[in-house]
Structures are given as C-alpha cells and as structure tokens.
Length: 488
Image 1 (spheres, rainbow, N blue to C red):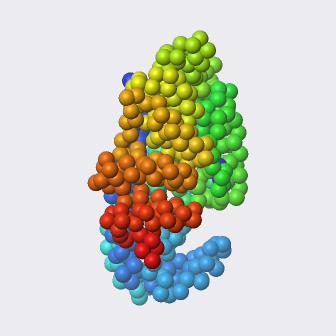
Image 2: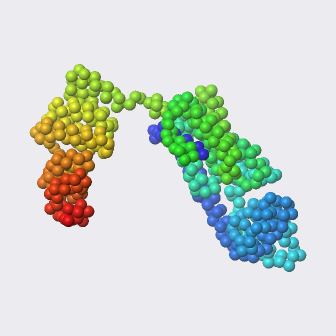
C-alpha cells in the first residue's frame, strides 16, 4: 500500500477552484440524492423479501441452477443452512446472477403447473412492486458476460459511489489534486481532462474485468487522472508531500515526476495481490490517461504550473538573521537587535535567535527590547537541557541588569519556578515561589508550583528545605501527596 499526498499547493481564493468545488458537490448530490433514495427503497424491499415465503421457494432452486450450470459457487450455495436462506446476503447473491434472474422472471424456475406457483407469483409480484427503478446499476459500468456496450457509463460511473467512505475518500483526493491542476489548465480544459480521465479508467478496467461480473463505479479513475496530470505538470520540480508505505509514513521533498512510476507500480501490485474489491485497473487507466493528456497540453503550451513552496521567495527569516549579524559586526547594536526581534517574530521558539537577541538587548538594559526578549525566553516550552540552561542564565542576567528593575509577571514566575525546580536550581526556584506567594497569593497555579518545588526538594534529599514549605502547602494544597508526606 502506497499513498502520496502533496503538501505544497493550497487553493487561492483570488481565483477560486470553482470547477473542483462543483465536481465535489455533484458527486455528493448524486450519492445523497438518487443513490441514497434507491438504497432505502432496496432495504424496504429486502425486508419484505426475507419475511416472505420467497427465500424458501427460490433459494433451493437457485442452488440447483448453480449445480446444473457447473458454477464454481455451487459448493458454497449447498453449504448455506436452511435458516440462513432468508438473509439479505443471499438475496443480493441471487439478484446478481443474471442468468438465474432471467429464468426466474420468465417463469422457468417455478412454472405455472407447480403447486406453489400461485403463492410464489403473488409474493414475487409484491416484492417486484417494492423494488425501486434501477439507478446505480443503470449508470455504472457492467462487467458481466455479454454485457451490452454502454459508452455513457464510462463517464456516469465516475459520479457514483458505493459508500460514504468511498465518496469522502475520493472527494478529499479530488480537492487536493484538483485545485492545482484546475489553476494550471483553466476550468474548461480541466473539466474536459477530468472526464477523459474517467473514460480512460473505464476503458482499462472494462478490458481487465470483462466477464467477471459485478459493476464498476467511483470517481477514483478520474481522480487518478488528476494525480497523473499533477506529476507530469511539475515534472522535475521539487515538491513536498506526505507518503505512507504500508505501516511507515513520513514527508519528503522530491521531484514530482517520481510519484508517477511509484503510483503505477502500486496499482499494478495491488491489482495482482488485492483482488477485485477495489478497481485498481481503473486507477491505473486514469493515471496513464492523465499523464498523457498533461504531456500533450504542455507540448501545446496550454499549462501554467503554479509556483511551489520550494520556488517561492526566499524565507525572510534568513534575511533578518544575515542582516542582524552584519549589523552586529558593524557595531550597530540597536539595529541588530531590531533584526533579531523581526527574526524571533517569525520563529518564536528558536532558542538561538532569542539568545542572540538577548545578547544585543542587554547592552541597553532599560530598553523595552530587553524586557520583551527576556519574557520570550522565560516562556520557551522546550524541556531539553540547553533550553533550561538558557532560561536560567538569562534569568540571572535579567535580574542583575534590568532597569529600573525586573518585570516578572505571575505566570512567568510560576513557569520558571517549576522549571528551575526540575533542573535543581533550588535557590532561584525558592525565591520565585516566595515572590509569587507575596505578589500574587491568589494565583491559580501557586499551590501546584509549591507542591512541585517541595517534591523536587524531597527527591534531592533536602528534607528540611522541603518541610519549610509545609505551612503554605497545608493552606494551598492539603490533598497533595507531598503535603501528606511532609506531615509524617
């Protein structure tokens, strides 16, 4: 199993992908409209069937017919127990054996002279009256032996689906690939190629599955054509995509064209090992059709491939970093600090950028920059040793240099106290706890912060220092485990 989904291109609402949206809506209207109405009517008819005398009358004769025609399903039919004859699955099976259904409706299975004919005919007439006019089967591809040629179904089958999951899966891929392809081709050409992709998928699947019975339906052939168009459209341009290979998944950046042989190989492999539950030949036919159509369109100069992220303008982050270093070398520290500030705005969790910005800003300890970068560092969420050390060193420097004084907010005090406790900077963690208790005694995190600090002291073997916090813990966190331990 192999999936690859592009992560590069998003629809632009300055030129919305209306045709893609329209195709998605049309597929949904067909499925939740006439297909769902047909399904409900079929369920009602099936309930009547299994409750009637029809299973007991028809299924034994169905087994006899399978034996007479030397069907490979005869042994399976003989294994069905009498109590299981009245099951919707058996009805579905019988109704898809076209030869038997033709004989049944022609009164050649239960004949007019049969004593049970009148009862059977009455029940059968009621059942037929409940059955809906065929919709899905009429417009789907027919893989039965001697099926009549119906070219219209090469397109109409692409707007039918077997289940909600089948529909939603196809629509997600239609949106992901369709937006980029529509933007490149224009709406008219895009629609024509989408329908031709459906035809290509239908033709190959019709050849591969001819005479095997059943029907073919789903947008996957047309959607696969979009995938083939996408790969050929970008060719050797590098795109970022998510992929899954069996149980392994990751993202990678690679030439788009590499996806086409990977997709083709996957469809061929799945066809040979996956059976008929999925129309892999329809996928392959769509892929190849889409690839050829896009190659022809490119030769004719009809394609304007959207820009990928890899080809977009350079990341402004790199420009700010380069400017900051150049200005620092020229001893223009205020301007360098401004560039580091701009870089930090783009990557607020980049510890090295914050470290450099702090180094520039500390030269002007009364500036707003110094207080701002200190707060950014104090709020870093990383738990690695380098981040914790940066926070501790910056905290000590900030206390010494800040003018007119440190501006620590209660949330920052609680955050740093917890982190310093875990890092075993107990003196600074204790001072922060005391400052938090004094300046914000109602802070919602005060009890949890004191509990964590006392717990860290106990784990470090500093029992007396931990016990010194017992009065506050009894008041703020009496149910905490550390409070119970310190009372013993």
